[in-house]
Image 1 (cartoon, helix red, strand yellow):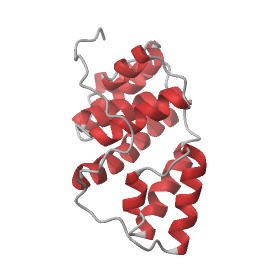
Image 2 (cartoon, one colour):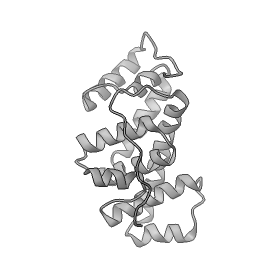
Image 3 (cartoon, rainbow, N blue to C red):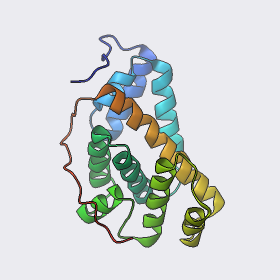
Image 4 (cartoon, helix red, strand yellow):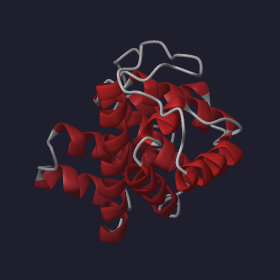
Length: 182
């Protein structure tokens, strides 16, 4: 059961944002309903989400979302990102599984997901070798900044949902076999 309250009366500004989320996804996820209790936080989350939707390609962003959410053990975010990556991103079941493990069927995308997971695991203190690895996969410094920004964006919603223990409003995802070739 969610630990934070969904507001009974949503402020007008927040309702407009919720309506936009609903139009994009076909429903308003419980996370957004809960965040609506604080219009400023809702605006920050959705503005950050919108701005970062323009960096990197969609499948790479989905892979990063899955890698970061897996690293943080956020079952709600894993379910939502799996749903979005499947319904809107056209990702295969294999690529979804690999994304959760910081990998991908695409080598360049795998490097981004792995680097995002390393950023989370090291709290941003990645090694020179890890930075060289993502550069070696073809990412420029501006793209590396985008990977870091995406990781932080997903950390934010992971933390909100882990604190809240947000009730699932879409199918849960199971555990993932942690063996993957890097």
